[in-house]
Image 1 (cartoon, rainbow, N blue to C red):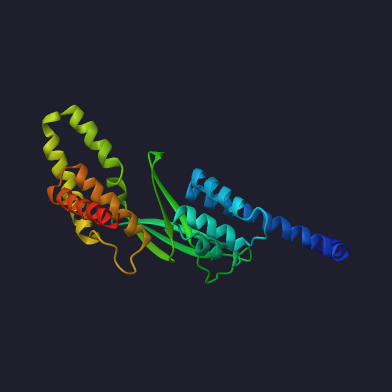
Image 2 (cartoon, one colour):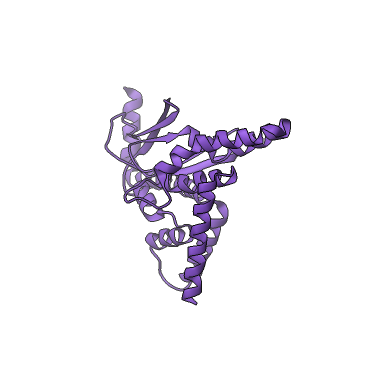
Length: 243
């Protein structure tokens, strides 16, 4: 009780100065952490390039926070403004829980308060999955309170190439069988995702589409290769018409 009274007495004497200092420290540390998180997600090169463009554009004028987010968003083609608003315009932090179920990673986010109470806040959280080393990774944005990620598709965008290379180096005559194995593994996902973006699809599906279709082409799936060549020819024809 004596400690409690002394603490109240100190705050009462220096109330204005201490509250400002504490608030500034918390704001600075949270702001710095969020900026580092954003830089890690966008990549150092993209972040630096976008920041340089922002400074050059507003060198002799006033700028708002939204101007910085806009520059980073333009340079990265990521929803930076929406992402950062979710971190700067609400209290607390998200707590991310992950569990494995049926070969899927299930993500859940809840709001954290120092008081221990639960809130309804929802963030856009950059998530990076690594397998074996940081060189083999997949990044995406967790934008819902609950979202799942198919582990097989993550392993197929990266590990499958290494496995195929190792296996064929050891037993070259198995090359065709290995290619057919991975084609069979990815074909269902490719049919489900399709070639064209779907209204309301998640960012995860948008990223996986290119990886899955590329994997099928690399492993020699004829239909995928023919479709890709058709898209390329159509694009080249359109470019010639525009010139």
